[in-house]
Amino acid sequence: HKNIQEELEVKAAKDPLTRLYNRRGFLQLAQKEIKKAHTLKHSVTLILIDLDDFKYINDNFGHPIGDIVLSKIAKVFQRSLRSVDIICRYGGDEFAVLIPEANAISAEKAIQRIQKTLEDNTLPNIGSHPIQFSAGIATYDSKGDTLSIELDTLIKWADEALYHAKRAGKNGICIFNKNETAH
Image: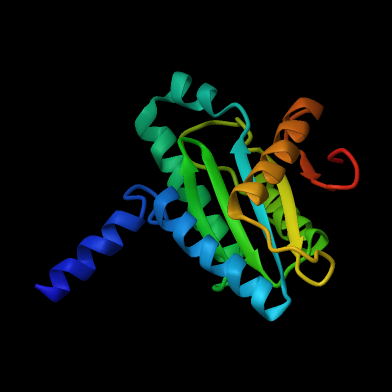
């Protein structure tokens, strides 16, 4: 019974298509990581990613091809990020990544590498349509912030930055700065 229960808990926390964490599993792990960052005086960075024009792929090539694209993108994320980073399929064509002990600049560099990897590798069955995404980055640095932060706040900040990146055009990255507007 214990093995079955453990297997069900793992399945409940994972997205069956991409095998990444689903939103539920991600939020549980991210909350623990933020508390840990505050206790140990580390930084933690959250990245929200939204695929650009993914509807075009589903509409023109079909949902089964869209599913293949999502799975391939998930594999690129897994190969490109560290094993301690928490990667999740946040929703339909949205992903979230929590990067412990990283600042916004190092997170931006990691995301730029992923963008370059996707640019350099065409995915099957979608012709020459580029796979691009926009990303919003928010960092909590317990050394610079005297108060603990809630996960909801970090998500809100990353979402604001993502929204700004989307408005600025496709294939963009924006870093949230709580002292200024997102840039």
